[in-house]
Amino acid sequence: MRPVREHRGLDRAGFEREVVAAGRPAVLRGLCSEWAAVGLAREGEEAIARYLRGLANDEPFEAWFGDPSIGGRFGYDSDLQGFNHDRRFATVDQLLDLLLRQRGGERPYSIYAGAIPVRRHLPRLLAEIPMPLLESGRERLISLWLGNRTKTAAHWDLPQNLACVVAGRRRFTLFPTDQIHNLYVGPLDFTLAGQPTSLVDLEKPDFERHPRLRQALDSAEWAELGPGDALYLPSLWWHGVSSLDEVGAMINFWWRDGPAPLLTPVNALYHAIITLKDLPPAERAAWRVFFDHYVFGDNGDPAAHLPDRSRGMLAARTPDLVAKVKAMLARALSR
Image (cartoon, rainbow, N blue to C red; front, side, top):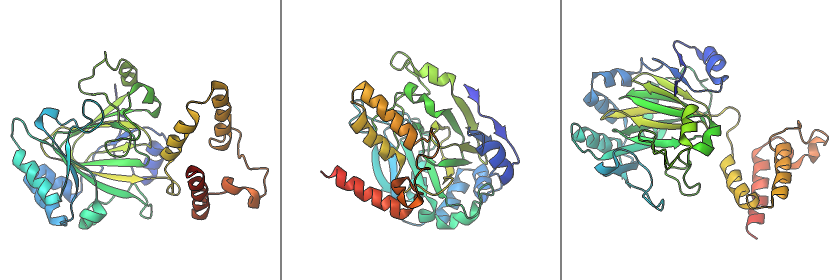
């Protein structure tokens, strides 16, 4: 695996020009090193825990708890019909208390809370985590991740992401989108947290069971981040994450270029699977032509020859148009 390319000292223009435009992951060393949270994390786990407790409210969120036997690797049970961990609600204060109490244990329970909405659960933290690489008016989702030595299976996210490490070290293993064939992805409609995830163990790969993983690793990149470092993740890149210390905290900034999708494309994927996958090969190939023409624009604007008022669903997307198409689909799917 190749190390992810690193940058230091980029301003917003440089970030857009050198990182976002390249469409590849990038490590931004020291991007968040001036945050108060990072400074306190360097003082110790008690200090960062005290800081986060002081900014959090008492509203609970879902957290994952695994027996010591899973070794921090959250995933499915043996037959992919359930999970290998429990899910319960906890507050920031409760979760931090559990993390601190387990330090030094030989067989700690695995504890993980992902994507805790900062605006909802730690609203006062927002003023403490400036992100100058993003335009102030750009819509974004900001989330906190807390846990101990845990492993997140390789998965993709739809938005772009700046993952900023606050406490502990994190190791990322990243794969281009086209490695989906080599990552042995689990069920599409029964997922750990919304996105389909790879079933491979990146730290202890079983090449007899997953031989194509070797090809994925040939295309992989890796990065290890410490407090104050950040990783830029383009949309739809696969990434597995390992938290390497007894108390870890990370803050993510998620955003999308252009208007936010009112329907996620993964729903179109699910519908296409059940309507196209089992068609005769010649018919399926013909539908590929339609998709390339109307969706992927292989031939330019498919409605260029139509007057604006006659473009229908090929017109510029608006909330009204999306609502109209959703209603049309609902009628069709209810028959």
